[in-house]
Amino acid sequence: MSLQIENLTVAYGKTPVIRSLSDQWPEGCVTALIGCNGAGKSTLLQALAGLIPMQGKTAISGISLSPEERRQQIAYMPQDTSAQSSLTVLEVVLLGRLGSLGLRLPAGIADEAMAALDTFGLGALHTRQLDEISGGQRQLVFLTQALFRQPRVLLLDEPTAALDLRHQLLVLERLSQISHKNGTIVGMAMHDLNLAAQYADRIVGLNDGQNIASGPAAQVLTAKNLKTMYGIEAEVTQGPQNQLQVRPIRAVT
Image (cartoon, rainbow, N blue to C red; front, side, top):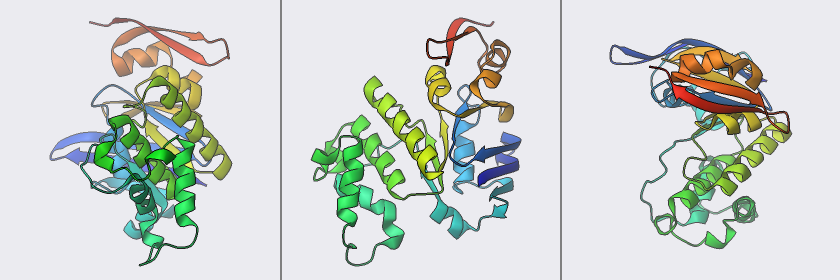
Protein backbone atom coordinates (compact mmCIF):
# COMPACT_ATOMS: atom_id res chain seq x y z
CA MET A 1 0.00 0.00 0.00
CA SER A 2 1.20 3.52 -0.72
CA LEU A 3 -0.11 7.04 -1.18
CA GLN A 4 0.50 8.02 -4.79
CA ILE A 5 0.73 11.69 -5.76
CA GLU A 6 0.74 12.52 -9.46
CA ASN A 7 1.19 16.00 -10.94
CA LEU A 8 -0.43 17.66 -7.94
CA THR A 9 -0.87 21.39 -8.49
CA VAL A 10 -2.34 23.97 -6.11
CA ALA A 11 -2.78 27.68 -6.80
CA TYR A 12 -4.11 30.55 -4.73
CA GLY A 13 -5.78 32.69 -7.37
CA LYS A 14 -3.25 32.89 -10.19
CA THR A 15 -0.30 32.19 -7.91
CA PRO A 16 0.94 28.57 -8.04
CA VAL A 17 2.00 27.17 -4.66
CA ILE A 18 2.48 23.48 -5.52
CA ARG A 19 3.78 22.86 -9.04
CA SER A 20 3.10 19.48 -10.70
CA LEU A 21 4.45 17.54 -7.71
CA SER A 22 4.69 13.76 -7.91
CA ASP A 23 5.85 11.33 -5.23
CA GLN A 24 4.93 8.06 -3.54
CA TRP A 25 4.68 7.60 0.22
CA PRO A 26 4.95 3.93 1.24
CA GLU A 27 2.97 2.26 4.00
CA GLY A 28 4.76 1.75 7.28
CA CYS A 29 7.01 4.74 6.63
CA VAL A 30 7.33 8.25 8.01
CA THR A 31 7.82 10.82 5.26
CA ALA A 32 9.09 14.23 6.40
CA LEU A 33 8.47 17.36 4.33
CA ILE A 34 11.23 19.93 4.64
CA GLY A 35 11.86 23.32 3.05
CA CYS A 36 11.90 26.99 3.96
CA ASN A 37 8.85 29.03 4.89
CA GLY A 38 6.54 29.26 1.89
CA ALA A 39 7.99 26.18 0.18
CA GLY A 40 4.53 24.55 0.13
CA LYS A 41 4.69 22.03 2.98
CA SER A 42 1.42 23.02 4.68
CA THR A 43 -0.37 23.53 1.37
CA LEU A 44 0.63 20.04 0.21
CA LEU A 45 -0.70 18.44 3.40
CA GLN A 46 -3.99 20.37 3.18
CA ALA A 47 -4.43 19.36 -0.46
CA LEU A 48 -3.80 15.69 0.32
CA ALA A 49 -6.34 15.92 3.16
CA GLY A 50 -8.93 17.30 0.74
CA LEU A 51 -9.18 20.65 2.51
CA ILE A 52 -8.30 22.87 -0.45
CA PRO A 53 -8.87 22.56 -4.20
CA MET A 54 -6.15 20.94 -6.27
CA GLN A 55 -5.41 19.54 -9.68
CA GLY A 56 -3.73 16.20 -10.27
CA LYS A 57 -4.33 12.75 -8.86
CA THR A 58 -3.94 11.15 -5.46
CA ALA A 59 -4.62 7.49 -4.79
CA ILE A 60 -3.99 4.76 -2.24
CA SER A 61 -2.57 1.62 -3.85
CA GLY A 62 -3.78 2.84 -7.23
CA ILE A 63 -7.37 3.50 -6.14
CA SER A 64 -8.54 7.11 -6.24
CA LEU A 65 -10.45 8.22 -3.16
CA SER A 66 -13.87 9.83 -3.13
CA PRO A 67 -14.30 12.81 -0.77
CA GLU A 68 -16.08 10.52 1.73
CA GLU A 69 -13.31 7.88 1.57
CA ARG A 70 -10.72 10.62 1.99
CA ARG A 71 -12.42 11.78 5.19
CA GLN A 72 -12.58 8.21 6.50
CA GLN A 73 -9.05 7.14 5.69
CA ILE A 74 -7.00 10.31 6.12
CA ALA A 75 -6.47 12.15 9.41
CA TYR A 76 -4.99 15.65 9.36
CA MET A 77 -3.66 17.78 12.21
CA PRO A 78 -2.92 21.46 11.49
CA GLN A 79 -0.06 23.36 13.02
CA ASP A 80 -2.41 25.78 14.77
CA THR A 81 -4.28 23.93 17.51
CA SER A 82 -5.20 27.05 19.51
CA ALA A 83 -8.94 26.98 18.75
CA GLN A 84 -11.06 27.78 21.81
CA SER A 85 -13.24 24.98 23.14
CA SER A 86 -15.08 24.07 26.32
CA LEU A 87 -14.84 20.35 25.52
CA THR A 88 -12.85 18.21 27.90
CA VAL A 89 -9.61 16.55 26.85
CA LEU A 90 -11.31 13.13 26.81
CA GLU A 91 -14.19 14.44 24.68
CA VAL A 92 -11.78 15.89 22.13
CA VAL A 93 -10.05 12.53 21.75
CA LEU A 94 -13.35 10.65 21.45
CA LEU A 95 -14.31 12.97 18.57
CA GLY A 96 -11.56 11.22 16.61
CA ARG A 97 -14.04 8.41 16.06
CA LEU A 98 -17.10 10.59 15.63
CA GLY A 99 -18.19 8.63 12.56
CA SER A 100 -18.56 5.43 14.61
CA LEU A 101 -20.18 6.98 17.68
CA GLY A 102 -23.94 6.88 18.25
CA LEU A 103 -26.09 8.37 20.97
CA ARG A 104 -24.26 6.17 23.46
CA LEU A 105 -20.57 5.41 23.68
CA PRO A 106 -19.70 1.83 22.68
CA ALA A 107 -18.47 -0.30 25.56
CA GLY A 108 -14.78 0.19 26.22
CA ILE A 109 -14.20 3.13 23.87
CA ALA A 110 -13.66 5.58 26.73
CA ASP A 111 -11.04 3.20 28.19
CA GLU A 112 -9.34 3.10 24.78
CA ALA A 113 -9.29 6.89 24.68
CA MET A 114 -7.82 7.04 28.18
CA ALA A 115 -5.10 4.57 27.18
CA ALA A 116 -4.30 6.74 24.16
CA LEU A 117 -3.99 9.80 26.42
CA ASP A 118 -1.73 7.89 28.80
CA THR A 119 0.66 7.29 25.90
CA PHE A 120 1.63 10.96 26.07
CA GLY A 121 1.17 11.36 29.82
CA LEU A 122 -2.15 13.18 29.48
CA GLY A 123 -4.43 10.80 31.38
CA ALA A 124 -4.58 13.02 34.47
CA LEU A 125 -5.92 15.89 32.33
CA HIS A 126 -8.89 13.99 30.88
CA THR A 127 -11.53 16.02 32.74
CA ARG A 128 -9.87 19.39 32.06
CA GLN A 129 -11.36 21.67 29.43
CA LEU A 130 -9.22 22.28 26.38
CA ASP A 131 -9.08 26.00 27.22
CA GLU A 132 -7.49 25.19 30.59
CA ILE A 133 -4.33 23.45 29.36
CA SER A 134 -1.11 24.73 27.80
CA GLY A 135 -0.45 25.07 24.09
CA GLY A 136 1.93 22.13 24.12
CA GLN A 137 -0.56 19.94 25.97
CA ARG A 138 -3.29 20.99 23.52
CA GLN A 139 -1.08 19.95 20.61
CA LEU A 140 -0.59 16.53 22.20
CA VAL A 141 -4.35 16.17 22.69
CA PHE A 142 -5.07 16.82 19.01
CA LEU A 143 -2.29 14.43 18.02
CA THR A 144 -3.88 11.81 20.26
CA GLN A 145 -7.23 12.48 18.57
CA ALA A 146 -5.70 11.98 15.13
CA LEU A 147 -4.06 8.71 16.19
CA PHE A 148 -7.28 7.55 17.87
CA ARG A 149 -9.00 7.65 14.48
CA GLN A 150 -6.69 4.81 13.37
CA PRO A 151 -6.36 6.25 9.86
CA ARG A 152 -4.59 4.67 6.91
CA VAL A 153 -2.89 8.01 6.22
CA LEU A 154 -1.84 10.47 8.95
CA LEU A 155 -0.89 14.01 7.88
CA LEU A 156 0.69 16.29 10.47
CA ASP A 157 1.75 19.92 10.10
CA GLU A 158 4.65 20.61 12.47
CA PRO A 159 3.45 18.15 15.15
CA THR A 160 6.28 19.03 17.55
CA ALA A 161 6.31 22.83 17.09
CA ALA A 162 4.91 23.70 20.56
CA LEU A 163 6.59 20.88 22.48
CA ASP A 164 9.58 20.76 24.78
CA LEU A 165 12.52 18.61 23.73
CA ARG A 166 11.47 15.52 25.70
CA HIS A 167 7.98 15.52 24.21
CA GLN A 168 9.37 16.14 20.72
CA LEU A 169 11.38 12.94 21.01
CA LEU A 170 8.46 11.06 22.61
CA VAL A 171 6.07 12.07 19.83
CA LEU A 172 8.48 11.22 17.00
CA GLU A 173 9.36 7.86 18.56
CA ARG A 174 5.65 7.06 18.96
CA LEU A 175 4.82 8.05 15.38
CA SER A 176 7.65 5.90 14.07
CA GLN A 177 6.48 2.92 16.13
CA ILE A 178 2.84 3.28 15.01
CA SER A 179 3.81 3.66 11.37
CA HIS A 180 6.06 0.60 11.35
CA LYS A 181 3.73 -1.58 13.43
CA ASN A 182 0.38 -0.71 11.81
CA GLY A 183 1.52 0.11 8.29
CA THR A 184 0.24 3.66 8.65
CA ILE A 185 1.37 6.15 6.00
CA VAL A 186 2.67 9.16 7.94
CA GLY A 187 3.51 12.47 6.29
CA MET A 188 4.58 15.46 8.35
CA ALA A 189 6.07 18.90 7.83
CA MET A 190 9.22 19.48 9.87
CA HIS A 191 11.66 22.32 10.41
CA ASP A 192 14.27 20.50 12.50
CA LEU A 193 16.48 18.79 9.92
CA ASN A 194 18.36 16.71 12.47
CA LEU A 195 15.16 15.27 13.92
CA ALA A 196 13.93 14.60 10.39
CA ALA A 197 17.15 12.71 9.65
CA GLN A 198 16.81 10.72 12.86
CA TYR A 199 13.14 9.71 12.72
CA ALA A 200 11.92 9.91 9.12
CA ASP A 201 12.26 6.89 6.86
CA ARG A 202 12.32 9.22 3.87
CA ILE A 203 12.45 12.96 3.28
CA VAL A 204 10.88 15.17 0.62
CA GLY A 205 12.67 18.46 0.02
CA LEU A 206 10.45 21.25 -1.31
CA ASN A 207 11.44 24.52 -2.91
CA ASP A 208 8.92 26.93 -4.43
CA GLY A 209 6.30 24.18 -4.49
CA GLN A 210 8.48 21.70 -6.35
CA ASN A 211 9.98 18.38 -5.28
CA ILE A 212 13.72 19.05 -5.26
CA ALA A 213 14.71 15.65 -3.90
CA SER A 214 13.03 12.72 -2.17
CA GLY A 215 14.32 9.55 -0.59
CA PRO A 216 16.49 8.56 2.37
CA ALA A 217 18.10 11.35 4.39
CA ALA A 218 21.50 10.78 2.78
CA GLN A 219 20.06 11.51 -0.66
CA VAL A 220 18.15 14.63 0.34
CA LEU A 221 20.21 16.30 3.06
CA THR A 222 23.19 17.24 0.92
CA ALA A 223 25.03 20.56 0.97
CA LYS A 224 23.84 21.25 -2.59
CA ASN A 225 20.17 20.56 -1.82
CA LEU A 226 20.26 22.59 1.40
CA LYS A 227 21.68 25.54 -0.51
CA THR A 228 18.85 25.28 -3.05
CA MET A 229 16.07 24.84 -0.48
CA TYR A 230 17.21 27.18 2.29
CA GLY A 231 19.83 29.49 0.77
CA ILE A 232 22.47 28.38 3.27
CA GLU A 233 25.85 26.77 3.38
CA ALA A 234 25.80 23.75 5.68
CA GLU A 235 28.04 20.93 6.80
CA VAL A 236 26.49 17.45 6.71
CA THR A 237 28.27 14.79 8.78
CA GLN A 238 27.65 11.30 10.15
CA GLY A 239 26.47 11.25 13.78
CA PRO A 240 27.53 8.82 16.52
CA GLN A 241 24.59 6.49 15.76
CA ASN A 242 25.11 6.76 11.98
CA GLN A 243 22.33 9.31 11.49
CA LEU A 244 23.12 12.43 9.48
CA GLN A 245 23.71 15.69 11.29
CA VAL A 246 23.28 19.10 9.67
CA ARG A 247 25.23 22.10 10.90
CA PRO A 248 24.26 25.42 9.29
CA ILE A 249 27.29 27.61 8.60
CA ARG A 250 26.08 30.80 6.93
CA ALA A 251 23.33 32.30 4.81
CA VAL A 252 24.10 32.61 1.13
CA THR A 253 23.74 36.21 -0.06
